[in-house]
Amino acid sequence: MSFVFVSGDLALDFAATRKWRRRPAPDELLPTGADVARWSVEAGVLTSPPRVGPEDLRDLLTLRESVYRLLHPDAGAPRPSDVRVLNRAAAHPGPRPSLTPDGVRRTGDAPALAAAIAGAALTLLETRPPIRECAGEECTRLFVDRSRAGNRTWCGMEECGNRVKAASYRARRATNA
Image (cartoon, rainbow, N blue to C red; front, side, top):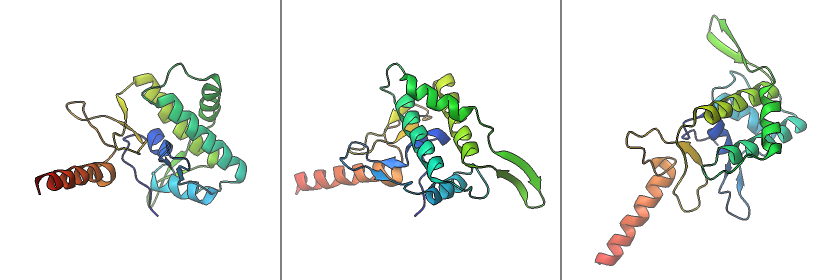
């Protein structure tokens, strides 16, 4: 399984690894440390997968939920516990870039991955770009709206946009038939 990166930001793409949050049983895309390690490479944070132990996995998933709550467009005042989680992750050194004969490599461990995600979240909190939640009926993915008109509706056309447009088309056809 490949991950989807349509949120326009590392922190939001990481938050999207828990899908369908309003369902009784949301989809967990990172059930194991190996999944987190694979995500870190697919997201371009690290060049090779880090070792992610059970405690690292717990810390990263806690960070993910704090990031989601802090960046949600309807978020009120930040929870002190979410602020602590974010600041603790940001305090670690991030991935280390180096130039090799094969190009630039980014190495690091699970705390370095957490630091990169926390840094991206802090940048969003500082710069306050328009963050939206997908308008798909069950989708809870957050994304940065960089559309020219500032009216982006779906997290991505591949998933939610096409699904909504196809359902609308079927409804119109049924009405006209």
